[in-house]
Length: 298
Length: 263
Image (cartoon, rainbow over all chains, first blue to last red; front, side):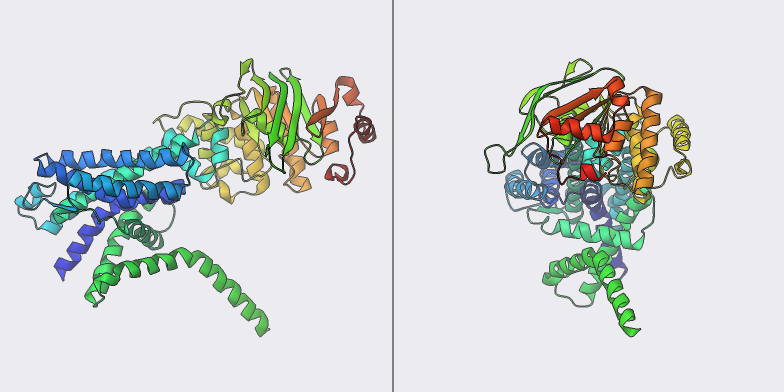
């Protein structure tokens, strides 16, 4: 049982970095960016293929982040310069990355079993796999949210936040909204690439399919985090994302433990997210329904 | 300060909905000029303002701001010269950001955004002082999200933002039209105050004849994409609504069934 719990928490922490990426596009920029479904395996592919060739795993993870940024740049340029709707731009990048990921790995999957990973120094020092992942992933996630907290407080970060809010106003203040959107997509996809690299190292392989449904997982984690923590404060909201990603994995572990067929997981997640996204309207609907009932009662 | 030469804008060119919104309009504003622009629906008032702001490319003519040809400059590049307030009070501010963050965005209008802090301590003190002058109690709500403010408060804040870094030209696009009469009057007197204090060159679109006559040193009336009537100086001082309507009709404009008459 402890094993299952630790496994779920460690996986949640690695996915939280991806969730933070989704948060930047979905909540800050107000763009549903599907390219992450390709960027996650892209990060995994870049990291694993570098590790296979004997590269330092930390360097490999950093390169995964940079290549993820490039993918975000692609989506950003498609969206702002070619004026393709954001959703479609993301889908185009995602599809293109499928081929690119196969090229990078040379096969649909790539094993790095018994090779060096970012978690290796800790497991060699005697930690179990899950604990090592929690420590390394946790440090990484904390560094990421601290950097983002600082960044979104700067002039540039404020300009990106405002762009997600009111583009007309932002242009009137002399800010290029296209550049801000591209920048946001670059940062977001960089984080997703890094997350993919770490997930692959935790499971000792990269798979071209591993990004399927990741946007939905990211959204589910984001919403769970918002519901659980809520409240004001940007740092608080970022911490909520980590918590949300972990709780999501715990819920998944629980339903699997209760006997759900693993093949039904994605359906389960999709329904959960659909319900959660509907929740605000649902509450409103329920309120008016109750009101009309009360009126009739009189 | 602003020079507009033969400005032409056609919407939906080549379709059944083709509409010439501006037809060879020329206009010149000297430093300190405060022009009110009036006209019926579809007369081209907002198109003129939006063309100057660079919201869309124009089909002909030139726009010069402070001696610089900005005709081909994108909207965000022109922003360094312009302060803008929109008709919709929601349009001028970022709702999910707080008051001081909004002011800080405006304080850096036309500057490169860097990795320095978005709002500094010294700025906060300055903003607090300016907000106190608005007399809306906003100086104690600087970390409140702008989305929590009323339409009038947001419009007053937008005005402050537009003038925070003195613009070469202030563009007001029916900025009180969406407010209730009492709030509108407040925002208008604030507008006057800010313009006078900062000696701003201003172009104000309005559909309110009374305001158009009362405010500013020049008045233009537009009709079908052209400037139909232009009045300034002493003639404007002694102008009455009836005179304006007569002038307008003499120039060939039709005033029937228009909200301009009702105001």
